[in-house]
Amino acid sequence: MLPPVMVIKQDDSKGVNVHVTHGSAVEIWVELEHGGQRTDLTQLRNDNPPRHIGERLVGEATFALPSDVPLGYHTLRVRSDGHEAGMSLIVTPAWIGKPERQVWGLATQLYSVRSASSWGVGDLADLTDLAVWSAASHGADYVLVNPLHAAQPVAPLEPSPYLPTTRMFANPMYLRVEEILEYVDLPAAAKARVTKLRAQVKAALDGADRIDRDAAWTAKSAALWRIWQVPRRQGREIAFQEFVSRGGPALRRYATWCAIAQEHGSDWSQWPEDLRDPTSPTVAQYAESRREVVDFHAWLAWQLDQQLASGQSAALRAGMSIGVVHDLAVGVNRHGAETWSMPEVFAEGISVGAPPDAYSQIGQDWGQPPWRPDQLAALEYQPFRALVSHVLRNAGGVRIDHVLGLFRLWWIPEGSSATEGTYVRYDHEALIGVLALEAHRADAVVIGEDVGTVEPWMREYLAGRGILGTSILFFERDYAGDGSPLPPERWREWAMASVTTHDLPPTLGYLAGDHVRLRNELGMLTRSLDAELAADLASRQDWVTLLESRGLVPVDPTPEQIVIGLHRLLAQVPARMLCVALVDVVGDRRTQNQPGTIDEYPNWRVPLSDSTGTLLTLEDVFESATVREFLASMGN
Image (cartoon, rainbow, N blue to C red; front, side, top):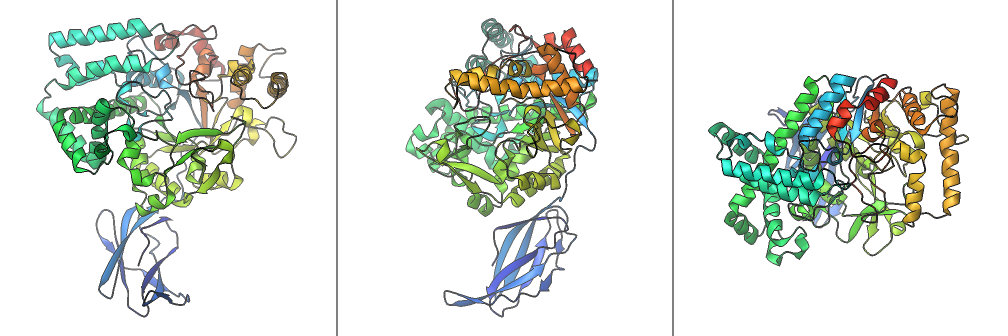
């Protein structure tokens, strides 16, 4: 009688088609999300002839929805010949349109930003301090961080924040142990043990030139287990139980997966067969027999929710108009918590990636299974709705990694190369509609990473819904003309503009051609190193020429002056959001990620340092005269 779901824009005049026995009367109404009904649907003319479906002659009746159905998740119901059916009706904003003015902020990889108080890895207290400092001292309106999605509960941990075990929950590695309220109530012996764990991990990692998640998490998880065992006062226990109740089956499954993974490893395809199905009685029995461990992982999720909320609140109180902007990864680990919890949503024997482009001339295979578009529709887009709602719960905005994946994804059959994939399309109007509705409810800004292989109409569609695109300075050229750098006044308004991104080296490294030499070392070039360096130098020189013509750098500028000049140029673009990478502010040179590699380069394991390679703490950043001068030179 009805499809499973219909997603429309508010004030859309789209009609609803109902299939019933030919000639039968139809009763139709809308049950509103927050109570009440709408029965004022009008039948429209439909001249489509009836069709034989088996032995039935089935006709199609079309009804117009009222133009003022409110935003939300409603249910449309029909009744005919004693049969009744329902359909999810999702009414979404036509336009988000945030931010309302131009704002600027910092972008950082949180794990790399370590303070004197963190456990070898930057954490949520460090994020809070960075947000408050940048707002109070320099007028920043937001801080953009890498995806904080959950990783495996036991070592070895996946270093890439873009390959999480699930995006539905956050990574407890980012918890600040000492800010959990029950920490102060630890018995003396237990507190001494926690203090010793922290001292050991700091001695091992504070001077290390690689982020060691395994060592940090092994120590921190042991400390968290001790705090978990401290009795909670009644009010805290009530709050915890409310969080668990609100988390529902999704939280229970995730916590159960973590408990099983601690015993059998983080790859569920290698578990005993009767534990691979989350709905099996064996899994239910397992969860009950290990209730304390399951509850511990739910408690970690609660602590993360509290510290994330505290950080966002502190950012806003310090003067930010947006606060923390989280990053939503495009996919998950093939054998992690999300695929175990929702196996029906993911395509088997397929991974997603990208065709050859400027990032990787041989294409990319990200090793992540894609969502099935048919299953998303059958499930009324509930998985995507839950995902976006979770990310925006304690945030002022979200960056959608590879937002083009809401339109189409590059599917690569198992055993094939990245060049042998094909695009599979998704219902972008439905997905972006749900995204817009959740952003509207959270009063959040949405940025889509729309770089790479893009059909122009996709960018137009995003802008038409008030979703920002992504403009990266070195890619902004007049491709319709001579390919010269695009003057700043011609850049897009509805975009987040930056000089660099986490998939490129910091600007000092880029100016030195570090990325070209690295790709050559890794065998990723399709022409000679000399030819690639020459082309890259010519490309960079175009930008220096533009800077000189506008008086933004002196004649024969130093690399450091060029970096500042490029950011002064960035300040002239009309983009609604200007984004400054923290690595550029401190003069770091090393890239965080080389696309197309896994362990060939220490991706996602490079700590923050200055131009000489000297490691920096967050306190160093706050006290740096170089940082103050850099931000002052931009007018920030």
